[in-house]
Image (cartoon, rainbow, N blue to C red; front, top):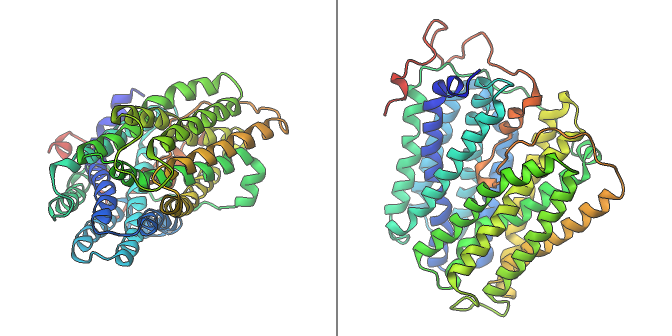
Length: 446
């Protein structure tokens, strides 16, 4: 089936995803920046990121029950409405522990939104183009998040404007999704989670997702604080954070293709070593002897280093998932990928807490020193595992973001090997009758 034929009915869904991700990208910037302005402790700012990840993991377990009860469109509406309300509450109650609690709810809601979007994409895609459909989604994903981050300099984080803009964007995402005439798929089936079995299946996959979760969660939650402490302007902070995501977008496909041509663990280990070295350079740039007012390197160099680092740290997750799936049978695929995502989420809970404590005690550069250490440990672990087991027969690499705030467990079923998991012939409760045209184009015009 041509890619355009698959994507045309999904235009409204992708439009809604784009809008909500712009809002999420902006919120991910203003929360730590405003927390810094309000003199939250670094450990409290780290807990904001961990709380988001805790809600994200909880949603991976509970949201399927919501989807089975009310369907895709209504689940999307509920999650978006709650997420928008939370943004308003952040403005009304500026207190560390209130914000930490609200970030749990935010993580829960966004994981639910991603689950709806990604399971819907899977139901519409076929085995012949599922990877291409997901690549388009990831492109929309990355562009939206970067655009949201670049909105930061357009307002004052100490005022209500940026928070209100975030709430408006999240709410606005309801319009195209609620108005679509495309039939929504049936809810996801329940997946068993056996983490012990998963580790036996792929130690490198499990350890990699956990390690990357610890490192990426810390950088995603505290990277803006790192840049602020180095004296970056708001525009430079936004550019710095966006550079890492852009690097991840650039790096995924080359590393993925390379991993298809050799033992994936060689590519994973090399990427981890490169990430450890770049992290060390950024640690030195940030200083390891307390907070400082200026970076040790020019700002352009610091941003360039983070761009390169992003190319590796945001690609290793997808490589680890692909490696684990090399050992999984077809009927284990969804369970395997869902378990890896939960492992990644747990790492996201742990990482920011440790990194924030290190930043308080050692200095600004400790954020990337933490990333460097965990990547170096992972590289050693991968090399050790290469001596214990031969490389498996490889499956085709599928692009995967590995950015904790942009991924949902439903992406697991987008793999071309997962078999046909199309929507049921029976319409969902919130879907139009079966004789309604799939999409005549009017539903997607905004």
